[in-house]
Amino acid sequence: MPAKSFLPIFLALVLSFLIFPAKLFSQQTPGPDEKVLLDAVNHERAGEKLPPLKWDANLAAAARDHVRKMTERNRLSHQFSGEPSLTARASGAGARFSMVAENVAEAPNVSELHIGWMNSLPHRANILNPKLTAIGIAVEMRGEQYFAVQDFSTAVGALSREEQEKQVGALLQKLGLKIASSSEEARKACDSGSGYSGARPMAILHFETPDLNQLPDQVADTVKKGAYRTAAAGACSVKATDGFSHFRIAILLYGTGG
Image 1 (spheres, rainbow, N blue to C red):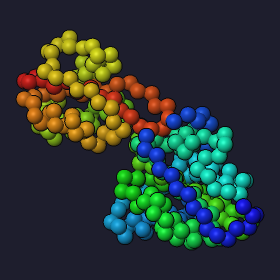
Image 2 (image 1 turned 30 degrees about the vertical axis):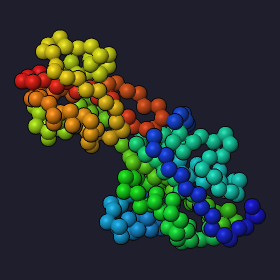
Image 3 (image 1 turned 180 degrees about the vertical axis):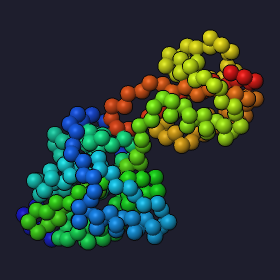
Image 4 (image 1 turned 90 degrees about the vertical axis):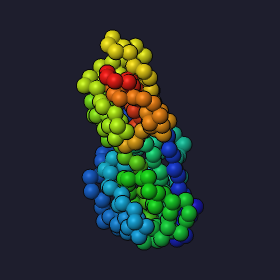
């Protein structure tokens, strides 16, 4: 590719479910060029009645590291030889997520970066994806050409075992169950499959999910169809190694008490 290219070029990448030890410097607020692209993205989302994407400093740090590699090589790619993957870059920068996506582009000005993304179906799909909640952007110049990276995610906060259990308990309460005062037996069942030093449960449900905002359909259906009155939720101790958030939960279901 010549040193000065005035044709806008674009690539997009989406990943929904990797280990990069070096922590990148986070960009707490967008710079002027990044702010233009952030506002443009959220303007497009508002037009589709979608919530705005929140600026994520960790994603921005990952985007900054990648855009510098693109300007050094004067070409676009989602992963250069020897470079960590998108998920590894994002997690290495400190992001936690259940989905990540990326747009990259080069153009002669910042406005054309956004226009080109919106005129490309895969890039537009990333910008208007209702499941994505966060974004980090980085823009760099090489000569008279702008290179840009948009890293998106469905951001998931780190939750303690108690917070996980409380969240699952609230979902079970909405299904009409009383929540047991102790989660100890459910935790034992989650961690090792043992437990039941007290009342033996009628059923034990195990599931793994990246999102604790809702119960898996199979779990919800089982609860609805059974004659259960009380439940205990226990969270497993899980070490996240790749940035993808995943929670492992055990639910003990009782007929009249727990």
